[in-house]
Length: 361
Image 1 (cartoon, rainbow, N blue to C red):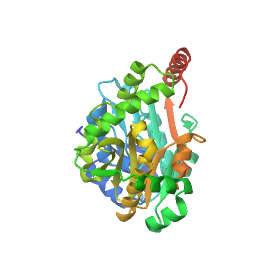
Image 2: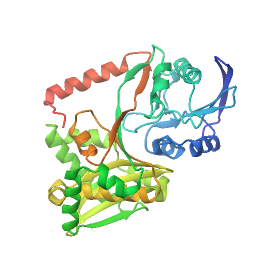
Image 3: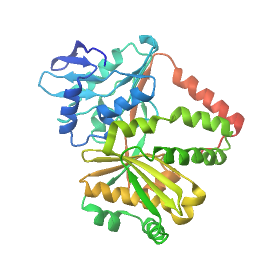
């Protein structure tokens, strides 16, 4: 853990104190009082980033003159000079970060946070906001920060699983679940990390399927996917979340068919990863059954939200999640760069896709 540094910043209501990294005890205290806290806004999630990637804790605690406090989860890159650093909440593939705000956020506070981030010497700074309260941050964002639209889908668990099943699950999903139940699949849920190798095996099979769908050379697909989700990341997450990491596996005639990973913190349950052997899973609709069971368990645990993660509007993934009653809401990302690094990276990716005739699945 890095030693904390403190500084003062000017706000419309007077000087505010900034402490970085944010003290863990304060972060946990604010998280416990924030009714909209996401799994991915906890210190545990930051620890997972730092344990499995080239990241360091750069979180910031803002203490305002009126006594209110905000924690901004943030990581920087290890072993990079300050002016080549990328400080993000979170890096691509790690989901929603953004401020932990148990008292809500006033416009002046949001603007003070943005102004503080604008002064950081890092080459790139980016924050992905949760849907709740995103409007005030949108109004406060200065012109130096660009908007990158994102949408996250979540199922409202109000009323319990009976209401979710009856009123929010689509008819086709209920039909698929009943078909899976008639197939007499064996379903196992692991909260110790014991089934991580099973998930990894299914994930490797999924990479081959995705490569074929996208007209991507298998070698490139394996390199890209394992860079995004390296072997060992799931084990690290399972170890740090403990019983709050549920790894569901459906077996068909003794063969692993499908698996999903669900994380939980307080009232927030989050689907994180999925993998399957399509030839074994699809005929018996193993994946919808796992989602159904995980959502039912979240209801029993008192969760208010089952977060199904990001989807592109109009995509088949959005359609699939909507079948479980998931509703899409904006979760914007704001970012700024001192040099156009992202534009260069996008250009290179576009060129490679054109050469290999890549097709987005």
